[in-house]
Amino acid sequence: MKKLLSQSKLMGLGALMLACMPTAAHAAEINSGDTAWMLMSSALVLLMTPGLAFFYAGMVRGKNVVSTLAQNMIAVAVIGLVWVIVGFSLAFVGDVNNLIGDTSAMMLAGVGQEASGTMTIPYNLFMVYQMMFAIITPALMTGAFAERVNFKAWILIAVLWSLAVYSPVAHWVWGGGWLADKGAQDFAGGFVVHMTAGFSALVAAIMFGKRSSMVSKPYDTGMVVLGTALLWFGWFGFNAGSAVAANGLAAHAFVTTFIASAVAMLAWMLVDNCKDGKPTIMGGCIGIVAGLVAITPAAGFVTTGSAMIIGLLAGVLCNLVARFIKGKVGIDDTLDVFACHGIGGTIGVLSVGVFGSAAVGGADGILNGASALLNAQMFGVLAVAIYSMVATFVIIKVVGIFVPVRVTDAEESEGLDSSQHGEKISHCCD
Image 1 (tube, rainbow, N blue to C red):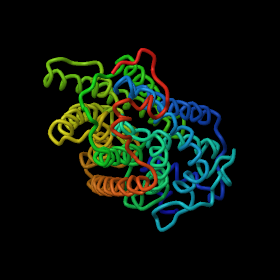
Image 2: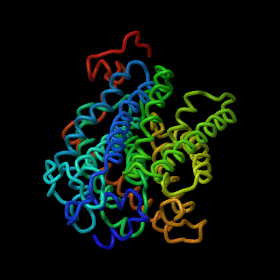
Image 3: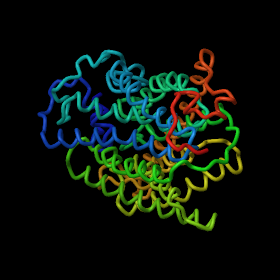
Image 4: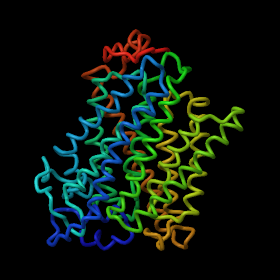
């Protein structure tokens, strides 16, 4: 703990998380400004899950809109409760072999209204803020196997994945685990959120297999734009809130977040125009998300100029990877989750090692004369990607023993709205 806390100036959010552990002897006083900002940030991040639901639902066929909304919204209740019961404790409380936390804070034992460590917000507010991250992360994966997953199987997969993938990786990076010891940095979730979800989504898409038809007309572009707007709005709580204080670092993360997402939108649309002859608003929306993903781990560690480069890389590379995965490889990642989150998250965490600036709030990257950070980031990429993929494979196999993970051909043809939920969107069209 002493070694980890000594890295606080370099680790951004990660060190602040370490400081919240209940073993601290003296807690800082609660700051009303910081508390107000973190309450707002928690609400903003919660809004992202409904935003994601609209974003995904607008891109599927009309007969699968309800099911797509349900797969995302159910995570709020199910994963929220899992986090309260044991997920938070496994991620942030105690340590078992530098791999995972312990169960001493099950049912939020000892997680109260007082500040903890050097934090200036209530301990239970920190828990709630982190809950919102835990909720949206498995929901991100649903876009990879949209239109063909058994809803009951998805609930089981989400619960097991949250406990076996999300909580351990959160502990590795933010809770005092072995990746933090190696110097890996993640300001707001490149490793913990986007890489875990993105690489897991790739495995899930392969295991679920292709839909009967991969060519389909999106249900409602307007719904996609609405979902994007909610995600973009909420993401400022995601990134700027990760300063865990109402301060200059939060403001800087807010600025870099906007810059990267704006550049990525334009870059994605430019690639679409070059490849397809026309720029589309749906492509622009996907580009925004790719840029937001890529800047997430770097938002509090890089300059505004570097944020522009990160956004450009995300808009171009994520677009090209999405085309390659479906067009050349033939993997039916329905809504390009791996390209946006797996590749976007990887671009972001490696960018920390390249563009990181101690003058901003992190450690210096290779362009600022230091190579250690990039080495740690590359090692973290391999570790998180491999672990997430292997664990997801095992989880889906285990769930498949008890519940069919994929709907039948007849249910897929009928549409998941009707076959899984007995509901339909008005004026539904295929």
